[in-house]
Length: 237
Image (tube, rainbow, N blue to C red; front, side, top):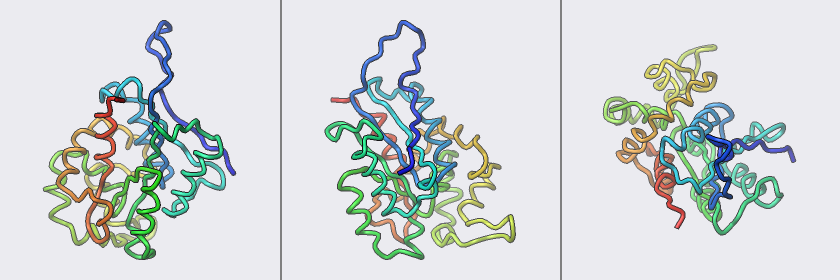
């Protein structure tokens, strides 16, 4: 099995005199995408103090490598996450730590029919972060009023998420919508990560959408903000 890269800033100290205390709880992120999610969650880790995340919590982004790099099938991704806990790649404490597996639900709209089985399996041992149609939906939430102005007024096209454009300009509808709003290409612009500074806006806007991943098929859905909010509120008690 290919090695997995871990990104965290827990052991980055502001001064050499700061005491190092082993974190009470780790939150590990494994994501379907290679670039967009990586840039976002690594920036979220960098600004943990800005978000007042408890000092006893460590956030860790687990980056897939080599033959696992393109792993995106949700079932395989959940199996991969479970393997990391067993093979010693990470120091996972089943009593305290949390594994968060992030993936898009749009594949179930056109390819898979076993969505409920996948969700049930994944929730046995993990937290699941799901967006329907894709992660660009969650990114859009970082812009004030985007739910009312861009999402709720365009639900049919967003959930269909058809291809638009031709040739090198061909992309899915939700990505095209995000690019128009942000001026960024989410799969090739690392500045995507800077949106994490506005995650509190995204958390509040997400509450206007469906957050129940068990009923997200055919419904615009995101629960990424719910998970991040639960981390911010976690007081390790």
